[in-house]
Image (cartoon, rainbow, N blue to C red; front, top):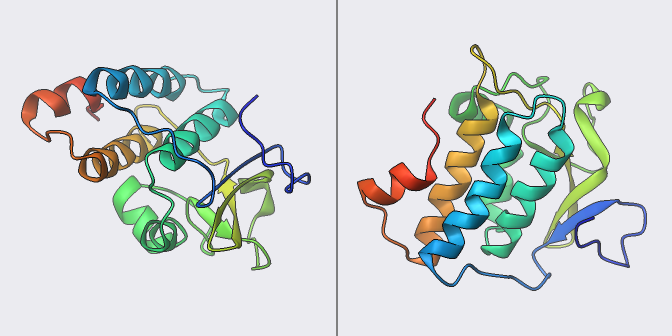
Length: 165
């Protein structure tokens, strides 16, 4: 099981902007961690592991910021960037307390906390011929991590880390 904050007992998995980061120190370590997430992308019946691994990586790279969370909470931006066929009221994340639209599309026990506000994680992940939102979301997170960590963003780095879709 992943790191769960003891103060958030109602959740099975939660990451927060206050949690200690575990930044990849080398490009090799970054690549290893990315490969672990990639393994979950094609696991069609295991969206929980994909969501938990990618959001743990997201936290470890210091990417839980207001700008990133606002982006992931915006249905229009998620649809445009990830071909994310979500219900009309939410995106990859949905703020606790707001109308959930179709609540079955969010894990009620898995959350991201930013500036004290809780956001539920979507469970609406696909990776097949017609919908590749897992790969697109993964590539978005990796791009953010490369920029944040100062690793090279050259073609070789992208070929090693990114997933073509």
